[in-house]
Length: 177
Image (cartoon, rainbow, N blue to C red):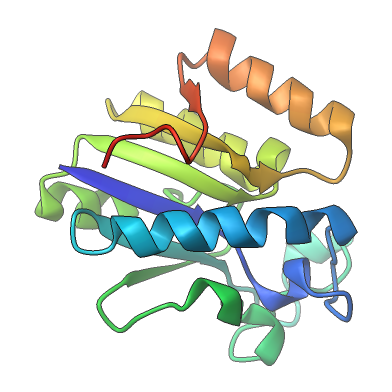
């Protein structure tokens, strides 16, 4: 069984008025990701992760305050059409596995293969990929459905996932569902 994990596609990261906007280049992944999710619905589980912080989160020593729990900025972007049938995992750290029920959800679904997408390639996507591999999942990354703040950060993360973590790097249009 396969599951798609969409990492942190939230208004604070994805929209220009967001608290930690990833930049205009993020819009380039909206359409391919939305298209992939539309095709994937029904044949695999869709799991959205949400960065979910308290107002006094220690992470704000590193980053500006963002994705404060129960605020509009913490919501998944409308373009991805999240559904009540989807799963939502709220997280306070970079990895979607740390301190969450993600592993339990995947095991209950009988998933052994994870397809990753979302933001940021070199931070939350990378940490989630590493923890997934450590837990024995077969991990694929949709390279056209993820972005980083800079090209360097994106390329580094792709290389690390491919060469160190053995993540299969693929394009959303070539993956057979």
